[in-house]
Image (tube, rainbow, N blue to C red; front, side, top):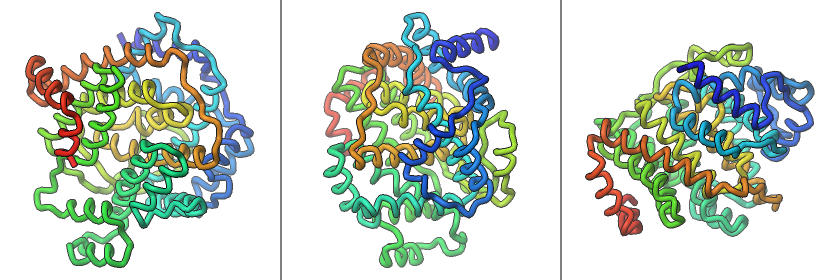
Length: 415
């Protein structure tokens, strides 16, 4: 069985023009860094300082990254594997210059995400740098309204504006929890940070909520983001994938979890190589959330299908789900690295739009592909609901119709 799965992924790689012997093109890497506004980034973190210099000037082997992604798909994401098999049968995969670009973006995103996850000093460095780059365009993060308004007016995208203002607090929360002494974390201290504009209001609320005695959360913000995307899918006729959004949010609501910050490194499973070894940090303090394998599998495959159906610029949006630190990480680390990779991806997309660069269109038949993917995903949504939310398929379908018949009412209740 494992060998058959491996063959499926190998065939997909071949159809997409991907070979284990491929190496990066320094010229393409420099172009990616320019688009991310990182061509002038100078870090004090030695592993990344050496890495960025090396990849900008010398071709780098991609074999380890490809094998890591392959391992993640085979061992953790059966729904993605099913879609790959169907896509091969329908000849949906083909070579493209955009795939070559996406490979280089994935390579850069993986290194940055792994470094952010394992070294808070670097995390702070790159966050401060990119937020200052945004300020050059008039996007000031300290004001939530200013950020939303500036991004919306400059790009014409409510999706992008919403993502920016919802992601920034989550990223700042990670940073804040990692750098603060636990003894300081009390309401008075947090309120003083808010009054002194060290935290904006959403950041203030997230940190304040983390002080609750139980420590458990139903992840209302995450549920809101998932449900919001589900509404979009439902309205556009992607009902099967919208069902996945419903399954994910209902599971989060029922099975509350505690986000735990503890010492430990966050790396892809089965990782190897000098780069990851250089990031090892016995004092690293990061977030873990006990999501189940079934939930992570559904979230990953649902999000991929949603991106394919609804968004363009897949060359910089898909990589955040494909990097080894996301697709091949432990379930408890998944949301931490996914948020970091998404933040990098959204900032890259933001700069592309602010610079008025041409949009990269997805495949011409992407709607057909997304419908097929959603049909596969529905099976996993019903399985998650039955086994982890404890809802049979009849009850699930009933609650789905109730929630999506009046989507704005459900959305307001979430808010």
